[in-house]
Length: 396
Image 1 (cartoon, rainbow, N blue to C red):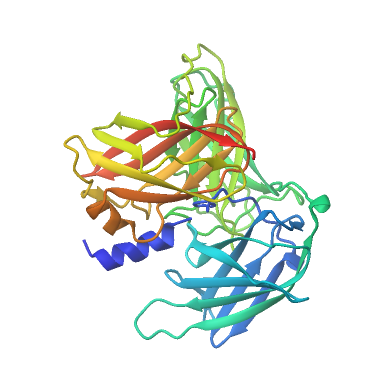
Image 2: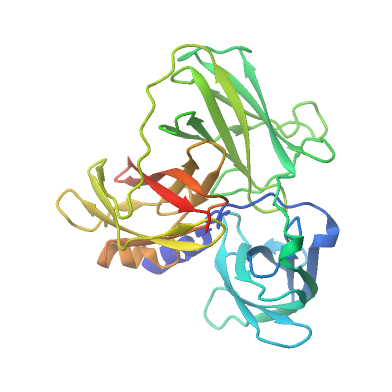
């Protein structure tokens, strides 16, 4: 395995989303007033602002897209630096930059200290020896006081149709999935690949004891036809009760979106899995030992880096991990109510860490407080690894 190449791929996968993917990523309005574009020396930089007001003192997530040439080719693996400077003068705030699951997409996370107007300065260094950096300034970004705080809301919806209309536990069911613009009510038809696919579907049982991952098939049909923008999947629900379906998609130039819908299955329900959070858990599952490198406190709407130590059954580092959906590992969180979903991948450079220090660091940003079940998913020698644990997220 090429170490430097794999590190670059890890860097490109680290968000999202969270961020994205690593942070949870809220749906962004396609309102052009919130999309700022600058062209400089053969590159196009596009900054997407949040759907609602930016609030002083609160952590803010912005989205940057980097493209090259007249054909607007995405530029992944770049190093991105971003700062916010008050127009009225004062301290410049630095924003952390992490790549998302979409090539050329980067998530900027930071804090505007006071209300007012700001200029966002961005410096992008493309990959490769001797690559020249490009810089751009975006103005003007308005930040309001705390009293203007608003709640982020999705502007996309997940529509689910099942055949048969009322499937039973264990019965094969055909899912017909589509993403709908909540404002126009029109089906979205153009998507970019995210972690190697146009859609990832996560099926979560109502007790949050089970997470199933699939890649629905995107129908290749004529534009404008009745099936344009439709995904299909044949699957089965293992038990009765309510299931939450989370779809992770990337409408063209809108970044990572996570939308959800519920499906109710008649019949017997599975026994509920208890959800008891631990400050520093040690979990042994799938012939793997997972533990926190240090006790970690999670606070809603704040980015936290979760360091995980991974060992095999003999206490050795997991040097045989393989790439899964363009990342070395994936970490998912679902809250107890089944309403909140978070997906993150390791931060940059973790191949060296896992080989030498057994450690991976995952950037995580929870949208709300509560109790969450985590699912760590990886692959060793073509065999799946699944480790589950529970964390508590504070609202303060």
